[in-house]
Image 1 (tube, rainbow, N blue to C red):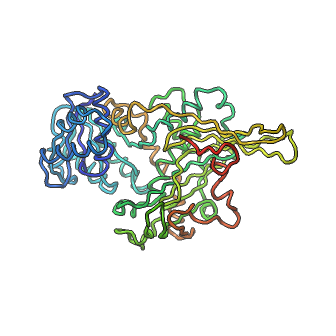
Image 2: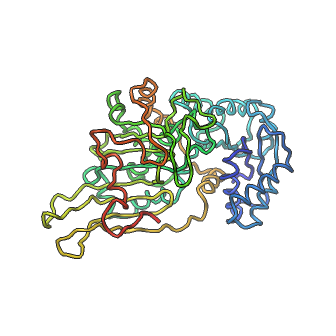
Image 3: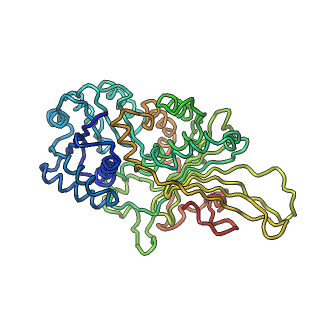
Length: 480
């Protein structure tokens, strides 16, 4: 197990909010000890004392639930070097040593090729590992080039293209529910499942992230990585084991089976939009194009929706809808599996059975199954919701990912060919959007998103059957 971690871009939000708390959780759980060393590198003119004080402050702010001694140990283990990530000499000073080191690139994706080149010139101790945040590249061509650079630096199994969604408890439970329960796997196919929605709708607006977000947008920020990863777990064939080869092979199979969209498909099966001014709760939200740091000429979308189909025996005929939006009226973060209706109802003409829906809540985490049952009268049907509360994870998602990096288990990281296949799936969408084949719609901040298209209707647009609050029954408000 590696006990040296170097974080380039160490003074940023990722380190403060996620990596430092993850290290504190690993320390509290006994996964790392006194020999562990954290080296932070960034452009700021800091020294080790300043960096340790900053780490201690961020740990108090973002990891208050961790024991004080664990937080203190992480801060004490830290040291700092000012570095230009494109300068081989600076990079070499950060990674110097005989023992292997895990190098975390907490940097804008545009800097990845320069950083990897500098690492190649600087040299890494044998057995070292590289960690990259999403998005991996900016398109298919850049992803291929980055893979080429990485292959010349370390073996593929030493490259960790991390996606913290894959370490979330409920995401892991998608596999557990499918593969460990005989009642589900026999009906986990297009014969029984009409539609799968993978949704990350959030009330959060830009929140000062224009420097990153305006050059990326919802499609690249969420759909290309997080949501496609969830699609893989929902749709893949049962792997022989959950080892890195078996699991990642099956995920790649799913991406390879995605039917590529034609220009006609992109026009009719995708949407993009950005938010106008509005109110979310007690807060007034400016229009996206008026947010500080936004270039209106980029035509960056804050809402993206894509409908995909898989050319496979299991899934032919099932629609997979992936969508993500910012500054919406309510948070909705879930995988919703809608089953087909029963072929016949032996009840009165007024009886109606809504489709069964199995929802995996991502944030908050939980599971809910919506079913139809008998109401107060024998001929009356009512909606029932069965909710399961998830046990708190022993480690936060980033803690799980960092532990895998230090131990050398890449099962939950994205393989090079998998990253390229994900870009292949969305390349037709990116191309058509760049050519303005799909109009940029608008929606008020705090609303449900862009209005439904005329042929969709409100039910189709919001898939209200997937919202427990829109159903008759006990008034359940979804996953706990």
